[in-house]
Length: 101
Image (cartoon, rainbow, N blue to C red; front, side, top):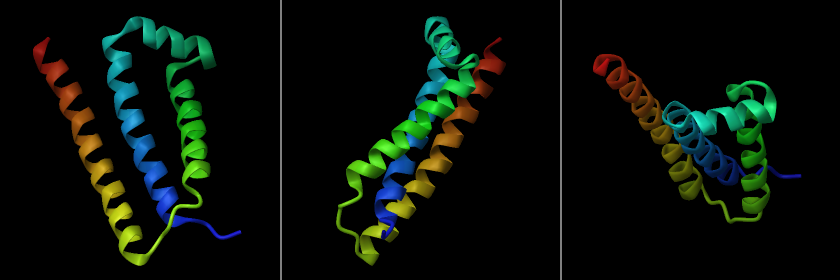
């Protein structure tokens, strides 16, 4: 079985943005945080399980997508950019929240 690197990179990019969104949403919405806690005992555990599920789902959906060296490089750069930008968004959000208190 050949691994589709582009599918993995795109799937990981989707998961990065999902985690960013869920992280901020748990801070904004107590009911969302409670829902995640009910699902797995702790909201971070639920986020992790959801992330694994979404990664596998997108990987399976995209496994037959075409991959050439240009599209692989583009997908990996998109993933790296998403990790950096997503991290900065989370840092900014928590810093802003800390300073606003």
